[in-house]
Length: 387
Image (cartoon, rainbow, N blue to C red; front, side, top):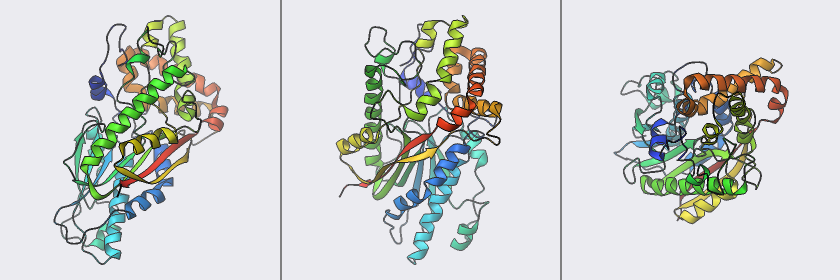
């Protein structure tokens, strides 16, 4: 795993305890910088509803209908999508003339996730005995029991055959660890001079690809035990449109240009050593459709109901596109929201502040091209058990 100091190696278990989106409600927090994810999620709701329509509804069930959001983070997006899922299933029960069961929603992420902020955003539970019509109409109450489940989704999190619907959006591109060969100086895959794989050597990118496929295989193995036979799964993660894994598309532009240059600035200014920079790597991999499909088919448990690349748009949400400083600040906040916790741990809060100030300055001077070129694509997958 990537060293967090010149001589200290952080294991994947330590990354698991540390990695999270920026918590709280500050300027760089996930709660205040997840508008793009909300926009992208809304554009995919029709695909999510198609997945929910494949779930077999059972009449007279005595146990709750269980939905799980894996990689929920700490903003309102996860609450909104859970609300959409449960209300859609309730409408299906209503259309079939069936009495709906109770509903449970589990919000799951790594232990370092800011669950406190998430739970403060949860609306109160609707009163017992409220009719289905009132539940469907209610916007300020929830019609489900809620709980948090800390842990890595690359391993088991739930009892066998206990979950009806799994949902995971914008999370599976995060690796469980940076491949060891990428930070080993004697390795051909050593990512010297870079903090991301965009533009790196082919051997470096292939190490990331292998790690992604190992992680996804672990994810699918766990879900194949936990999901009910009549259940379904909706997954969204960063995609690339190039067959070349060293071309990471939107993720490459986010982490491989101004973010990379800001690290180089710190080195050139003597604030950190080359070794300090080279021992940091962003554990993200934007997969190709084939990368993803190969793992699902090798697992063999799931049928692919839908698998496509979906254009999500820009991660930058700005009120005044002509204001270069706002664009620069948005880019810096986007980087900081998703990588700030790792950067802080690697070089400390003070140097982290210096780094993201440089990201902002560089992005401000390239605002127009960022708005034109920074686009994210997503793999959207709907899976159910193979018959």
